[in-house]
Image 1 (cartoon, rainbow, N blue to C red):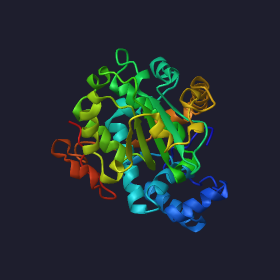
Image 2: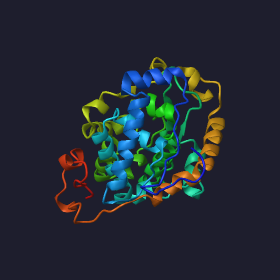
Image 3: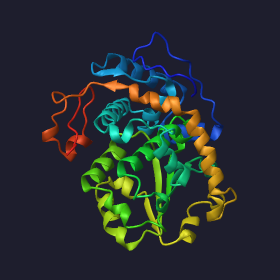
Length: 324
């Protein structure tokens, strides 16, 4: 999707949609998501009607690529997809320091991208999945904050999530922790980690298929155990910790990795290519800040929130969110 996006929650008409992906994605969508032309058309119609009638949603994207993020993540369950959209819109406003102003022209965010801390690999794997690569040691903890780290992840994902191939096949995350330093732990609070974990597993529309951590140092073991403890069992089962890159290469085709890790394309070239993509999608990503849902203490009683409240939203109403 390119160009200006419409945030009118009830436009007079909607842009036509056509499924233009290769057959393997069509087959995958049918087999894994129950998606076909009729299912998709009816689901988009119901989703748009729900948004138009929602009393608290003020502005929202209603184009097909955006709504299909949620429908495909939730395998075309309308109640689950609408619930996730509510939470997605809500967390963006509850945690603006994480999800707003995702601007590649911000000097700090640009410097983090330039460092090679986080970027997607150019080629998809044999299942069509997008691989997002991270080198934890590249993040300068003496210069940048945990909020900026989360903003980088948010910016990268928002720049990628309209890609329908990834909506269908999902994502793989690979993190090189070889040069992770103990200062990385000092920038986090346990509250931030817990709140972020809830955001990731309950509010962000993405099919996370695998998470690979390589050469995780011993000092990070307790942190990793805590992170795993607040994830759902489904997500925990998709986390793999490898003692070295030989183990990783048994799971990931090494030809897809940066040249420094056994592939053919230098990391700097991959980063430069992705940075150009971020520049091209800058206006679309920043326009997300204009989406609006009404939230206040009358609709979300912050003080009484619990983990169960976050996980059990009811369609058409807002559940409590943990923000302590």
